[in-house]
Length: 227
Image 1 (cartoon, rainbow, N blue to C red):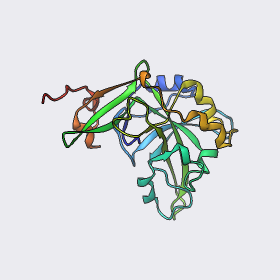
Image 2: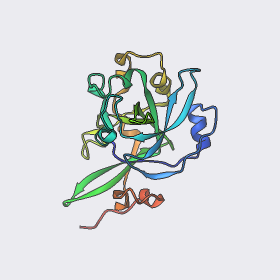
Image 3: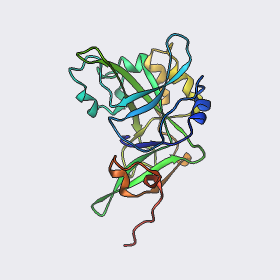
Image 4: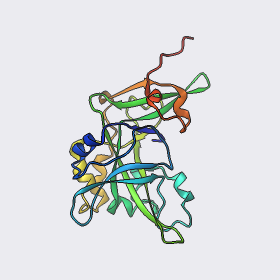
C-alpha cells in the first residue's frame, strides 16, 4: 500500500518535468498523510494541457452520502480498479499523477514497527498513478479527492509489504494522462511493479509516525540498532 510519502522538489523542476505552462506553488512536505491537500497533475479537458491541482488524499465517490468514506479509500488496487463502483468511473475519465520524492513503509522488527524510506536511485521525483473524483456537499460546494493505485510488490519491498504504489516511468505519463484513452484494458500494462534495482531503501526515524512531524529529519537515515 502507500500510506505516507514526501514531496520536496522545487516547483520549477516539477513544472519542467510534467510540462506545466505555469509554475505552481506548494510547500515542501516530508510527511504527506491521508486527508491532507496534495498536489496532483492532471489533464485539462478544454485544451489538453496539464495543470497542477490541490486535492484531498482519500477518494470520495460522487455518490457517497458523506466524505468520511475517503479515509478508507486512500489506495485502489490496480488489478480490480475497473470493477469497483467507487473507482470504475475515475479510471476511465479522471486519472492523475501524484508527484512524490519517495514513500514510506514500516517493517516489524522485534515487535516494533521500523519506518523505512524508499526513493528512486537516480531521480528526485517519482510519478505515482492516481485517480480523482468530485463530490458535492449539501451546500453544493465541490470537494475534489484522489487515491493512489497499488500493485504487487517487487523483490525489494516484498519482505516488508505485499503491495506497493504503481510508479509510472516518465515515458508512461502521456498515456496515463490522455483523456482520450477511456478503455481501462489499455492501461493494464502500466501496473507492473517498479524494478527493484531502480529503488533504494533506508531506515529512518520514527518521527514520521506522527503526521505532526514534517521536516527533513523525517527522511534522514538512521543506523540499525545493535542487538
